[in-house]
Length: 380
Ligand code: FE2
Image 1 (cartoon, rainbow, N blue to C red):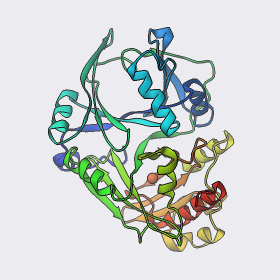
Image 2: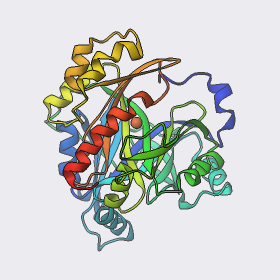
Image 3: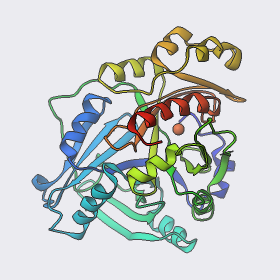
């Protein structure tokens, strides 16, 4: 993990230790087809499954993996059979395909849950123990913004692939990885005036610190703006920027998200690679669409702005990869278009070469690209 430095000193503030992102679970309308999309387009492999064939009557879930990244895609197949399946179907009705669970890998789920609730977290469910021949998983869950939750997953007594209930799967179709390694950060969009509420939640409940703040002057174009604060845990493996809309001449991109997601939720997940040029070329070849239209001047001025970089600028320009520098180094990043019909969830592909920040120097070019897309959708 590139950013895991000084863990002893840095974890001092954490309410409970967090080892990293355990998995990200999406509730979707059709998990079988969504899984195929993430396999064929994003280079994941389907490694496990839970559904009617494994004794679960009301829903189906696919576990997708690429290096350290684990996505679970879940759909309701009989929302009439259980309250749990109805929650999934209702979530899809309101939000479209979206993130339900940013699950965190903890040492002790019972301890983490009781401390979080003591500090004001709202419970989704108390610690549950799930057992099979490979041992046991303890899992509890607390609420965060919108209908998003954080499962707290303890797996120190489990030797299996993922968790009890999932059956390993080896599909015939296994395209090669595109080089995505781990989840770098996950961004939430919340309503106007609510950013600080959720910043306080992460500070008070989880003991996270405010790593960076962007006000509406940092992040603005002529038309739309937003405010953002990045909350991080002690070892920096968990980074949660929280965005809220700010007033502009036209509707903020965050307002557009809130309208189409019917409230707060996860806006984008940044997935890290060691070779952004290779990864983005592979993603493009497989049909992933990226925001485009970065002005040519961006690249002619790049060297002056960020200094010497290892990558050929003409390659970056061809792909539309953006670059930014901070005191620790530089980073390369690019953003996909939304991966569904609603203009909600999208991905960032990021390569860090020392930099610990989030690309503030690119916000203007990026937001102008987003505004052009918003305009095409008629949502300005
Ligand atoms: Fe990001």
